[in-house]
Length: 262
Image (cartoon, rainbow, N blue to C red; front, side):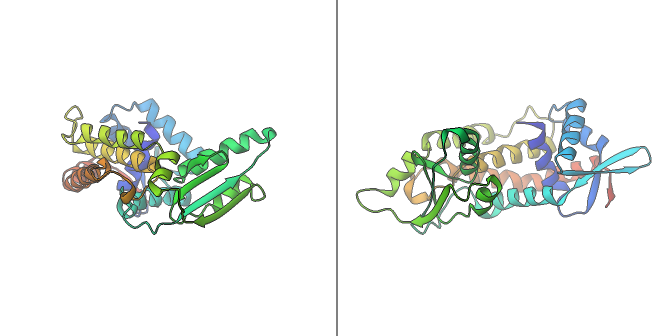
């Protein structure tokens, strides 16, 4: 878990939608609770500012950090993945989005970038040069940003015999690895981590763990997975703990955070 992932989750929980900037000393105090050093916090703030995710504000000798529109978009996307999209896809309509591409060997870097972006968007390789994802997925922005419109073909389709939907899911996605990640989450969070000093620390680590998990999940249809698919229980555990920490961690955060209006 990186300091930046923890920072983004903190910002999503306590800064998003509030039009405030937070004092750097407050951030050092909060992240000390999860064993992130002052040097790492300052380095993360500098790096996120240079990447256009944070704005810097001075008030006397103190420095405060607020969100940019870019960061707001990233955090809102994370919120949708956690609270709206969910970990279990129960609304699949039977269609797949297919992305076919062919790039010459001389454009190996572009091919790698496209594969990485497709994986991040929930696609998996069903065969060489053909990636799929369940349901309708918009990859217009990905293709445009990489300048690959002439090299990529995108369409939606339904599978047909002899191909089975469940076979497509296991061919294109490592379902065993996905399930193992959810099992790891359950092992860690069925009984919350008592090595952390308080519920604010636990809240930050919980949200960072969960968001990292759902962002790696291609959101496969529930009907193609085992009935005891561990994402179901993992989501229940996450939601119960997240609700508890709203009550117990928020007062700790309020006491720790010094902010100014922006």
